[in-house]
Length: 462
Image 1 (tube, one colour):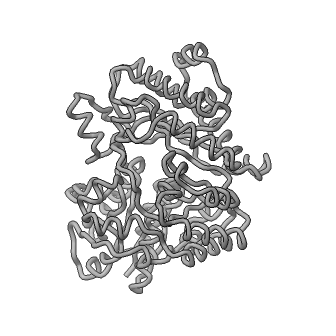
Image 2 (spheres, rainbow, N blue to C red):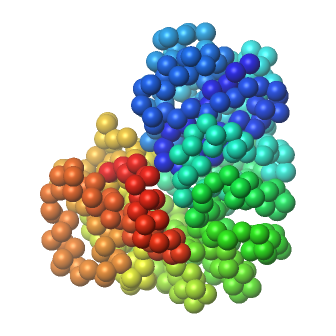
């Protein structure tokens, strides 16, 4: 049987790499298709004559992939559509859409045999252990979608879950515990994949791709009291075999609890650490269920990372469900300046996802949403429906926030600039400059020509 795996976006469709690998274990023929190439891809898929089409959409690409699915089904209604991934996990009712035949809630393992047996509707799978995951089918993915082979960064994950329970997150620990049970959640989502498997994945990336950076996509790399042995072994083997560096993600809490030895050794394979700050006001942190954090703690974690030589990318969210969202956002920006002026940062417009605690909070407190928002953080458009002036100011904070923090712009200048009107061309250019600033700080060994190549090969969303 033929399975078409349909991808979208600038980054690797990492989940579909595991799906492809599992299908191969069952002797199925697979091929990856790039939905970003335009509508010609629809006829290419039809001409390949698959029995199944598979999607694992990020929320920003749901509309595009649903369109592709519907057009394929119009041309051949016998083709069976399968959906899975984190968006589907939080929005399983998509199975009620007329063009959706199968929804998988849970890991791919345990679903393929049921799909091949003709089961339709919602398929719920059980959690096993990270040792039981298939090896990603990256080689075929790169052969089928060559732009991904040439993408400057590649993804790896050692822990597929997050220990935290942030109210805005569609993969929060609370929701997963409710669906799968606490013991299964800890066993599957909070344990690491074997070091040997991770090293083999890096070897394949090194062999197949033109890679400057590995994005180590764990939600909190330094989390856990019993992970030091695993981290040190992994980093030691990485350092011996590979020249590329990583971008990793952590929290202030885990950074402050990690040993000096771990921070020192990980730095040898890391060019930049992203640290979730999210907000500065204590009341805003409570809305995000991050009341365990505060500015002093974040500052100490930032200084500790810098003392070990890390570049730090501070990440925040603006456009919160508060009475004064612009003032809240400016307080957050000025907090970043106090913590680490001169650092790079990422300013994201708040997106509110289905079934999250934040969605319930917004509904309870009367905050509505934009009907047409595509939930693409690159646009700077916040999900909550504020008045037009507030929405514009928040968008401008997203567009200009990197400059505000890195160049320590005064409050007076910030307040003046957030009222400027930008046309589409200026908005696109600002997205390009922001991206260049971040790439330059993250991939420090890249030449100006190599950075230009990275920018030119990226579909900027603005």
